[in-house]
Length: 284
Image 1 (cartoon, rainbow, N blue to C red):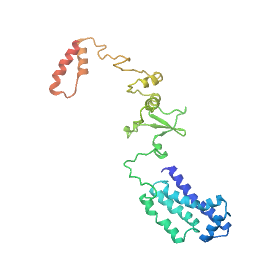
Image 2: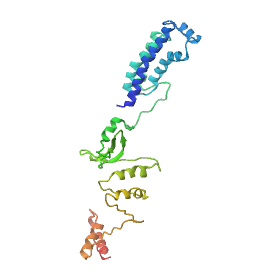
Image 3: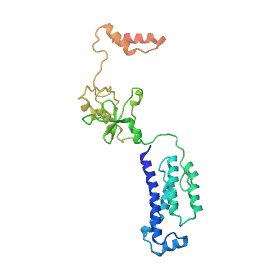
Image 4: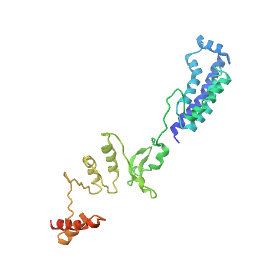
């Protein structure tokens, strides 16, 4: 449940009886229930302060807010309308007859149900269910900190919520849930701000990182070197060297290494070409 939407709904419902009480108090103070001509005469006579006049017309604003504002889903909107609107309409009894007030209450219900309103632009149906995460959604990724206040090491760190950490971790039944997708426009900090934080927090396990610009290595290699080796493989630049033939001195060792490098599963008739290439590589 979206608690922010529920809070807005509750405030609107509570504002309706408050506005009714204020309107009734003002009218009784100036002479009790009045007819429409007498009421307008009092309104324009200057006997009421601007605050009192605003209190008398507050139910109209609340009435429009109850309908125009999308406070929650359809079911909540109908409940808010059914509970809150009668209070607003009762406060407007000096302005409209009972029949008119009843029509104002009942006729818009189909509009609430079908999501229509002639004063606003209709919204097309959503083609997806994506939305900003609510507190209920975040319960699945909330993790208690350790005794030092740090997050656990076996997960991808997202941020903090209150005193808890938000982390993405694979589950025993759903190991595929351990991934994270960072989406943003170019130069919005996806690499240095988001990925570097993950690399800094992921200390207890090894990882392979594709770093085309070398930014992640420059930002995190010093920190990660405290936990283990950091190896850079860059065939076109400066990095660590890797020789697959290192330590293989005999002809048989070199031939097996060449086969490992050139072997392709399921070659079939092309196996002869692999054997010839392995012999040539071993000789070189």
